[in-house]
Length: 224
Image 1 (cartoon, helix red, strand yellow):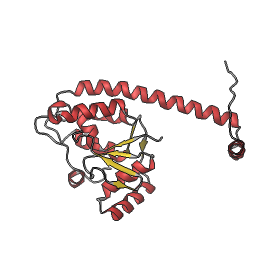
Image 2 (cartoon, rainbow, N blue to C red):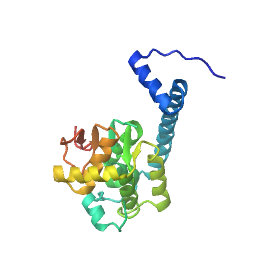
Image 3 (cartoon, rainbow, N blue to C red):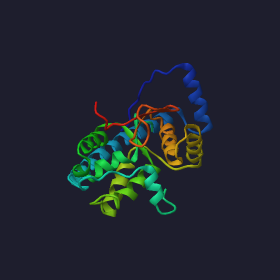
Image 4 (cartoon, rainbow, N blue to C red):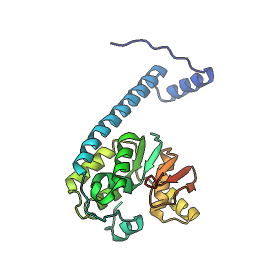
């Protein structure tokens, strides 16, 4: 069953949409239908991700080992084996996911805040973040995740907007590293956040309150 929908659109915008539709050999009606279909699918994916993350977080409570901390990005890439590698309000750096996944014992109040972030905020990540998460989650904690469980975390988090590692992101990461005197890996995190349109980057590795281009760094674990 289909129904008609009436939309009020500025004349200039409608003219541009008609030209774009002609270039794509489709109709304005099909473009609107496709946009709405994708929008609904994205929201459903977010809901599914939230439910799956809630289950994973509940399973992870109490893991980690006393005194554990996530490695810095420099430590990750120094020790890593060779080859490791939608607009949202917030971009999550790797440690936020590690605190949420590895449990309360190693993180204390950070686990509570990380849990709140992954369950309630509109966030995005990148292929680099997910690779770092997997690499650290299976081997850096006193009680690491199993490879299967870490893979499930990656699969679920990737249901949120996730910036792949592209040549453009690599080049932008290099430019950021040179401009702001960062490591390449930190520069690439900033580049991915910018590409996804995030205005805030939750990170412990970068300076709280610092702005890099259009992205502002916030450490969500600092006292209010």
